[in-house]
Length: 232
Image (cartoon, rainbow, N blue to C red; front, side, top):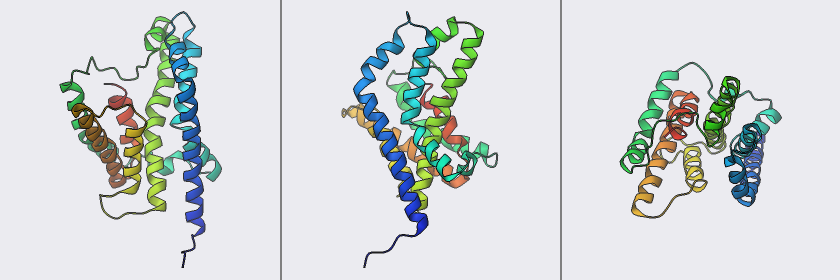
């Protein structure tokens, strides 16, 4: 006989569907307007603010809007998903170790052109617009491309693991799904080097989320996207 779902399982299913549909709709919009949006954002003849806000809105819609909707609907605070001081250094240190293969790959393949945390395509124009624009713009970048992109994985992973709990390190269903999401949503080639990049990315994201699970602290995920993933 089909096992009847508990109310908690039904709620978690609904939450995951909200995130999945929101993310896919946003990603579908990006697939249609992405080229035009990127051309708009790179056009230095246009004021930097509409370009920054347009890019930030698209990025937040893909990585952040879904979990925000769920937390508002369920009246759950972000802190309940591991934003705490306890085990902060362990979470960050463990996350750095998980990203080491990816960092080595980037450096060894000549993709590293300088360490640039909190930098996106409009950052140079922000810096030219004065101290206020540089400070406020960098804070927006930190929140959208750093905090939400990293925290998004932490929340999705935890919701999946609440719904489909696993005891061992592999498979950790939440970490597995999030690692595959990261690979699918970013361009990779299927050359020998491309496969190495996929492998190191998988190790980084899967490992990062295992560290979050072990420490109960999500700041390692945020740190990874602030100071590693979007900085190399």
